[in-house]
Each structure stands twice: as C-alpha cells, then as structure tokens.
Length: 128
Image (cartoon, rainbow, N blue to C red; front, top):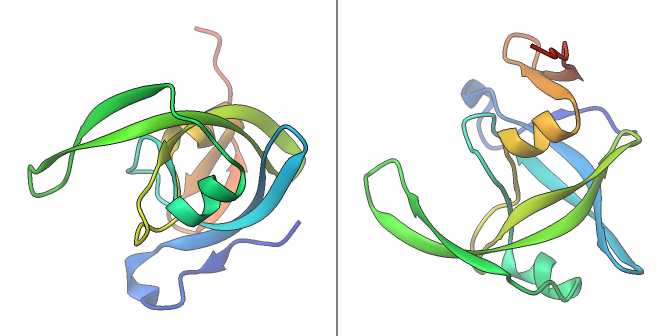
C-alpha cells in the first residue's frame, strides 16, 4: 500500500492524495484520489467511470461552496484502500473534475483523516 502523499500543487492546503483500486465486475483500475473529509461523496472523473462502464441509478442535487446548485448522477463501485474494501456510492463526474475521496467512503472503510499528520488512520468505531 502506497502511503498518502501531499497534494503537489499546494502544500499549505493540507490536502493529501492516496491511491485506491476501484472496480465493477471484472474491471478494476487504480485511481489517485484527493482526500477531502469536507466532501460527503466520493467523485470519479468522467474518464475514470467510463473506463469501468458505470451506469447511473439516481440523480442528486448538490450545493457548491458558492451556493450554486448542480445535478450529478450517482452510481456504485467497489473501492479498496489498504486491504479495506467496500461498495460505495460515487458521483459520476465531468471531464475536468478531480477524483475526490469523501467522508462517506472514509467512514465505510473505517478510516479517519488526521488533519495534523495528514494520515488516514483506523477510526474508533462506536456502536452507540
């Protein structure tokens, strides 16, 4: 497993990238994701989800930071990071979108982003 890397363009932002495998059926590819715990859903750029021939099953509306409302289609994919694999919901992105690993995926994998060390660590799981 490759260790998380600092996002190369801007060390000040605190963003990191991780490589994770995603797949659907017999097709699987490795994708470099920007880890953003402030993003709810994981987002796949158009070229990535088209390689896997993902099909949308729902369209949702999202509000951007500037209050703009956009619609994006949702699908599911198998995602594996560090031997932790789950089926997760993903936004089917557009051509210029970046691959983002969101908080729902992190929680599904039982991981949390430590903002001080910029590491993905096992989450303390609570049953209550």
